[in-house]
Image: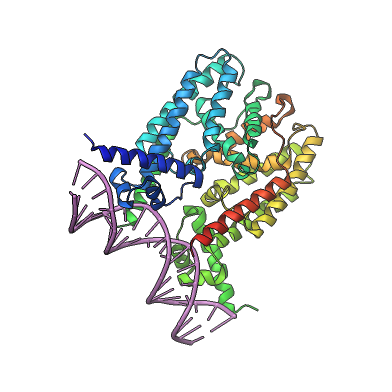
Length: 217
Length: 217
DNA sequence: ACCTGAACACCGTTCAAGT
DNA sequence: ACCTGAACACCGTTCAAGT
């Protein structure tokens, strides 16, 4: 059973880290986060093994929120607009958080928490995509994994101008969504990625970070 | 007039940095680059004011190469496939260079060299896009700026699985390209970004990095 | 005019000492 | 059981001393 002040500190740290990461991106210093939470620098490592682990926890929470939202959309009357709403929510997550954009490629699936959340995301994305596909509003060769990668892409497309033209990502979301319609479908040159592919990518990422750890010794 | 060994060191540094950045991404250490180039750590700062400046130089060179390729495509017989080839080349640049993916958002247009190269890129992208538009192979509401942001997006979409499924980016390039076709065109909710938007975004980026410099004092 | 390596400020992380 | 702050290794950057 955790001590009262420890539980409080943990919450403060998560809140502080969440805000600082969103505002300043992945390279905020631990010192800054600790100061905002009102604890000593060392305390951070008492609650989280490493900085990467701290951001993975927050990252996982955000993704879990998106999963919950997606699950609420599985019974929507219009499968097409449900899918669009899901993608919109996914991009908004990125648009409101600088660190998410930067983390999308690197941290991603090395951490088990993020792994779990990502699998949930893949599942609900596949559900929504399948419904839209069967309703005939999107092409037959697009999968849930495609959808996740594509709303990431839309967020990244607008990111360089994110602060200057706030809603620009909507343009690229709709442009990409037009590419998902059956009317425009041309044969794709490469098959969709499989869950297997994501797993081996996760293992590679894990191996890489372990290499870096070892170099420190 | 530069001394002979200085010119040689500069070349070695650029070559070493280019290779190390491509292989290990933006956070390779200066020490590593210097070692590969066979010079002392301090020599790096004799040739480049900062690490950021060094990567900006390389970044600028890469983009300039893409501009040259694009210019060669302006007279191609098929404007549609010329545009697709241009986007392909742009993504391949990212696919072969880890640092480019990471740098795309952050460094981008703060440095004057990168600014200049990016403006050249915008110009040739607009040329190719205009031809394709007038030939009726892409929709009327898409601009050269869109094209640049979109092939960046396609590269980023596949980046998490880049090492695991090597050619995956082709899937997303073609998916996005299908969204550019007139057949699927639906009204877009936001106007295309202007050159003006890119300029003010560049100024904001510059202001941010200057803030960070000042914090060091 | 340029190279070098020691020195500096900063960062993530560890840990002995406190409570 | 947890907090703290000093200590460590590492990084980008500066600079006095060399050639």
